Image (cartoon, rainbow, N blue to C red; front, side):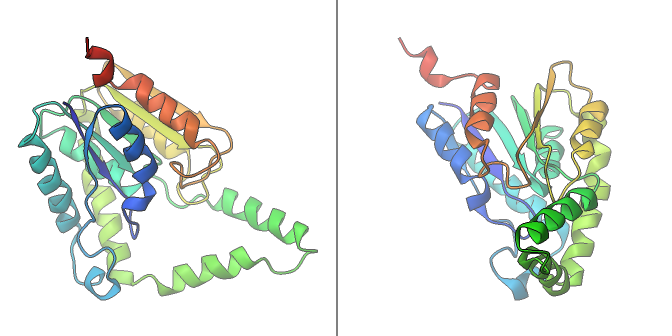
Length: 230
């Protein structure tokens, strides 16, 4: 039975990728979805370094390898950068990168969303603006710096990715600019690589309105264990 490591994003948690993980389980995969170091505990997040996020994912990957030699990785947002990094160091069979950040944030989409929300509310200051500003002001600065260091460092591995790779991004991503995925596609060295943009999806691509299409694209890309059964 093959395995799949799913890696969540910066300040996120396994719920971000859980719907896709559940679909993979239904299709015969063993899965691991670790909580990256410091995530889920605000004070602890202030103390960890970006390499500890990588080590958490690496530990989960090694747990899967103790169960099966056939392992692929799915990475969402920052997890996509970690996934690509691990795919150059372990015998991973396939790589799936979702909404990964090279260019961050997507101010144009943020402005469009705020404009639309303001219009619908009779030109009042939109609630989303306050939510966005509050998040910017309350995320500890040290983890943000660690995040940028991770992206800067691990992006150097992209030209060494040679395994089959699927890249998916929402065209309406309000956090990471979609051109990030185009650049990742351009940089990786894989002979087999695919890039899809979901026209109506925002950043939380596994839970947005085109989640069913995302699952279909992933399942079409990865070998199905159930289809191998007699």
